[in-house]
Length: 231
Length: 228
Image (tube, rainbow over all chains, first blue to last red; front, side, top):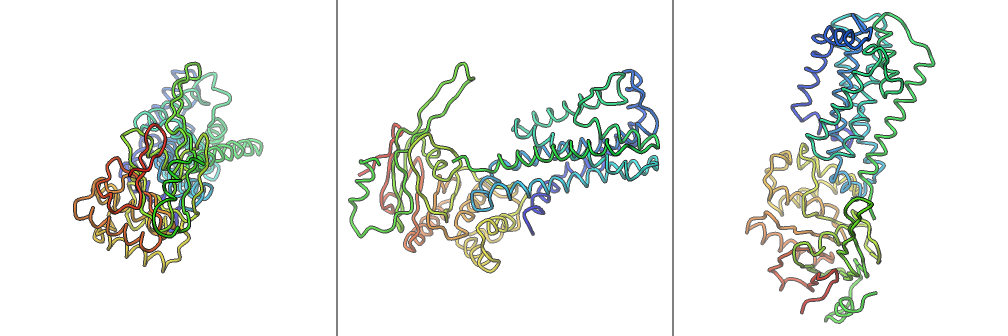
């Protein structure tokens, strides 16, 4: 089995990960869409109905991927550097880490999208699926970046949750004056549009693509720094 | 180059073999505290030592004397502030704290390291099977690291360092957690490797088996001295 598959397997062997893959989409999309809409009303936002469910799918994927990204970064410390020094090299080890993380983000977004499909049968499934994946990939990088700064599992997971909550409550649809430059802004815009049965402009997709590429590049850099020799 | 320890090493009996490790006047300082109140503590102040092929060399010192720091500098895990290190490409490193992945099995660790060492499948399998038999943990190879005892983790830690039959083996407190039988097996294994031409450096705060060693350095006040 190759390095990427082993790194992915390492994460899947945590029972908590499997519980999250099922429970988080169920909670965010199936059970909490109405609650999200009520929060939005209270904060002056206009999120409601299927748009709230669609955004919930994105947040579900983001939450899972962010947490998994954090634990990938934690796991990468120490043993990854030993492997890189043994001859695998930091770039190859980091590439395997990022591929394993992306594979897990794809699974997380598939779980979020499946919950959305089951609940609403969304009008633009292709757009929604891609935007949910973008949410997951961006948050994967958020988790990895947090993991590079905070080593303790409890404090690190709380920091990921803190970023996540700030982003949720300042995002589009949630308040009257949504934060213009949050990491998930474009993905949220596209997902809300898909929930309302509308497509999104090519420019929005390009911007989203750039955000995702930048986020993954940052995560890759973190993994390289984590695995490289200090000599 | 430092004169004391290396000169003393050169004076030992027997024909000299190829040098596999040279640590020459290595300096290391650790900086602590915020930028406006930065404190610097020198741990290594010109440490020098050498290991030749077929030598089993010890490095002792009190807790906090800088033994593991020196080892990490040699391996490349820490940068040095001065001095020179020459070491071979084919190096085996057994860290004091096993650097392993908790959720992967011993077999999966061997797969990862065999690929890193660029061993072909046959070489890797032969070496792995010999090592797990030699260290006595055949029945645990399909257990995850998190399920292993501390001693078995340490055996895996050591086996990974030996998988590619390195020219130089660096062992940092290698027998922590070993039972008596495994401890004896470890020394027998180390002597077999030494006799086969491997250079071995063992770092420990307590080295009881000095008769087995070619030479012992003591790290004191940031410098290495050869013990009589």
